[in-house]
Length: 231
Image 1 (spheres, rainbow, N blue to C red):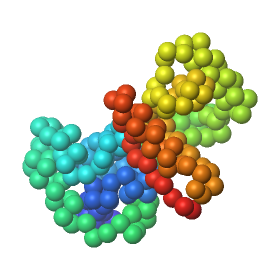
Image 2 (cartoon, rainbow, N blue to C red):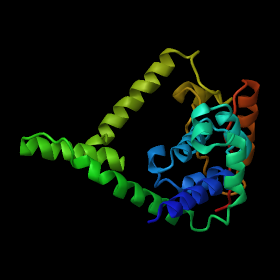
Image 3 (cartoon, one colour):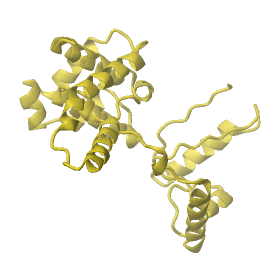
């Protein structure tokens, strides 16, 4: 895969994310970390994009450029000011219909590039070498295996413990919903939670969501986005 093609692919992925925002970012979950990008500056842009997303802010040319403004490393790597470089990324966007496939290719290229490095400096003992190799592969793939999961019993115990802590400290809530029962049981909403309100049509979901947003605004809090669908 020629280097100029890799650069074009990285620019296409980042450009699509910058143009379409959060919806495009969700499509590229196959890119777990900035290191996937071969060009360091592109990794820096992706890191900023994920940070903005996690803060519940809009992802676009302006917000990303502001975050990178004055970054000397970025300027040295690209030879341009962040705003100019990022604007060029968005000007070359041809669409995002195949964004998920682009992300897969990008990750495959990353694995191909980094895999040979995992075999260097392994322990002499064969068993230790195998364990170390597995650990390096896990880190490379950024994958969670079964031994990192929690059982339903553990999750339930943590949930009960959390509720008891909240009820013992009733004054400590996150973003109040205005619904006393919800606030008293789970402490309100906390970033970066995704809250789903589901019910039959025409029973007040939109009105409820609107009241929660108003209550959050009264507390000086921000709600990332609200999606109302009839599906």
